[in-house]
Length: 237
Image 1: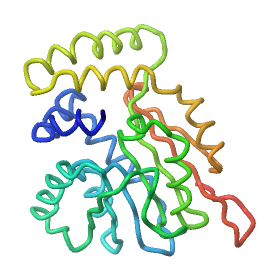
Image 2: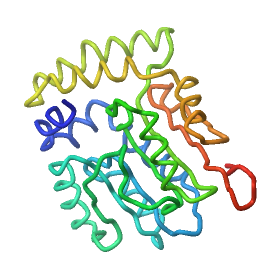
Image 3: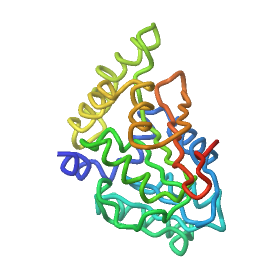
């Protein structure tokens, strides 16, 4: 279902993502890239990379590092490859088509693994987080950037109105598949609370999990650390 939805909006995906987030998605990705912790592998990975925006930001901020950008949608990655070529980054960012719950890399390959606006589209979220943790080196990071529901106050109610009324209306005018954005709104409204998702990351074996509320809580960045087995201590911020 997710593959069918995103294959119909690929050409306008970047434009609509920027517009419907009021261009805040750019700042959210930059914040995520700033939180990356460098390590010994000099490799980073972005899961469900889409058109590679976060992978590009990771490569830009870490010029000595190699980035793997992974997605299961070939159509999205084709647009990402075009952007990488325009920014002269094809030699530093490798696009790989694969499934987030079966990452085709050995354990401990990367200093950090990220996923932006993709975890809500994965039915088995726990398995995806465990896979991300597996391919991270001891002491490394797993970073999850996701849109969330900002509580039940006035702003929370206003945001729900935006998701259920304004976004679908805009999508009907601008998107070839308005149903994709109905799905988007529904997936945000039914995403776990920030505390519940933090607990999920801990249950997947990550430690020192911290969540950052962005733009009044409509998005959260979750950062967890893999245990450093050699030293017998947990990774720390």
